[in-house]
Image (cartoon, rainbow over all chains, first blue to last red; front, side, top):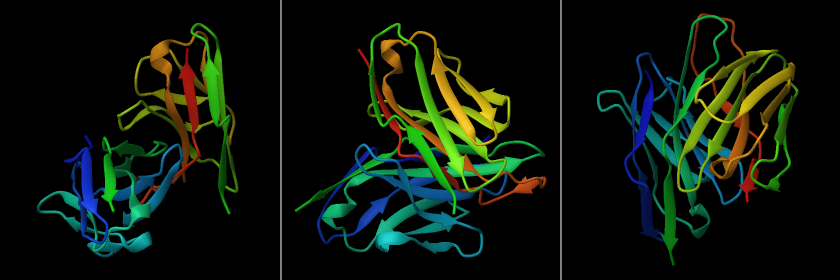
Length: 117
Length: 118
């Protein structure tokens, strides 16, 4: 069975300082992993995805994440936070097994990122 | 390119009234379709998914139902809304793969419907 755990429900950082949003996953099969961002009352936007080609994945807006199989982690980082980064972030795991079966797209509970001026 | 439309954007309904939220996808065929709900202060919960017309799988027993009358149309319904049905509802699609094992099944989301049951 798949699951994903976001270790922090709320992270607050000062503008210009690094961001770390933590995510651990559990999957019976080789997972696909994603980070999505949701600004207030908006839909979800894909930040980045792990495609199994490279363990360090670069996404939009300066975000990146590193897939660590030994730690079953996929933490999201950014070197320098910007006020516009304030949003809800979701770690997602998916896999599909079997013919004619939909992907099980499983979301973490989300991490709210606040940026202090 | 593919696009997904979801409406309405906001909805205020009285308790006991019916609900119908619609989602359509353009630019792709035979997509997997999903309905998620995000309650206040919570993550996204998968409600229903569909691999084809008339094929609906329910993840959580509840007051809601889903239907897929056409390949790229997914409808979320309720006969009688409860206060606990309030939340942010998101429709999503991913590409259907007919191979046995698939990775990288990225999902694409609509803009969501904010439902308030009063």
